[in-house]
Amino acid sequence: MAGNTFGTLFKLTTFGESHGEAIGGIIDGCPAGLKIDYNAITAEMQRRKPGQSAIVTQRKEPDTVAFYSGIFEGTTTGTPIGFIIKNTNQKSKDYTHIKDTYRPSHADYTYDKKYGIRDYRGGGRSSARETACRVVAGAIAKQLIKEINITAYVSSVGTLELDKHYSELNFSEIENNLVRTADTSMAKQMEAYIKEIRKEGNTVGGTITCVIQNMPTGLGEPVFDKLHAQLGKAMLSINAVKGFEYGSGFAGTKMKGSEHNDLFNENGSTKTNLSGGVQGGISNGEDIYCNIAFKPVATIMQKQQTITKDGELTTMQGKGRHDPCVVPRAVPIVEAMAALVIADFWLLNKLSKL
Image (cartoon, rainbow, N blue to C red; front, side, top):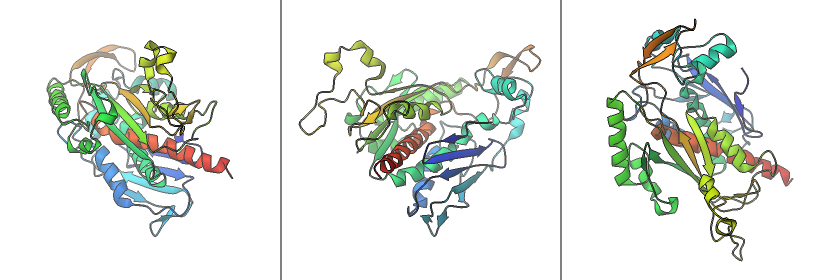
């Protein structure tokens, strides 16, 4: 299986399955001499872990990270950083009913057709459990680019939308509610809605907005490795993501050039930022902001039509522990992937100036 590595200089390779003994990763390209804040890594893992509230999956995993290489006396050595996260709360029997059946809108069918074999326990390699490894690497990337601030928050759940520009919001509210949105009133509405959806045995999607502030100019390459293109790839690689837009996004298609152009101030900053902090694939020093769309979780506690491995029609119903809405736990994953992209371009920019 290819495609398990992300990045050019700051690289992350992940391994493991949802119900295997452990998941883990190797971070290659992290410079020597970086003092690691283990508490910051733990805090990021706590934000992503299952079982943290009444509106997420009740799988109980401590998600403790064990580092095996690349760090000596709390400081990176410049060699590959190897780590594992043990799976301690697997309930593989919850998935025996899909051993020979494909779940609608899951990777079951495509995996089986591609490889001729699949790990049906929680989706195996296709499970969002893998994203815990991304959060570890993202937490280290954040420490490498500590002057750059990366903040993500839930901006919609179903039809409930936080219709405010990020500059109008109080980011300190994000971790004060279960949904991880930046508005107290909307947080209550979203939480109530997710609980209602869960009672129905159903799921709902939503969007996450990511804001990257204190950006330097000059990050990104002008052709195939545009900064926004790599951010798009990073976000679209996250489980359940169906869409990515940055800056004015699709709303920009409804504007005229005279409305959309970001006019310059004398110091090189711009009066507006419809470009989303990126022009020609290169950061211009303004805030980067993007929206990431997540579909409803595919596993629902309702009967649905599907097929068996032999192509016979049948019905199935979800079992086990699943998120009714994935976006609250996906906030740190979005931040982690943004950090990996920015750290990679930050190192590439340093290399290009040698």
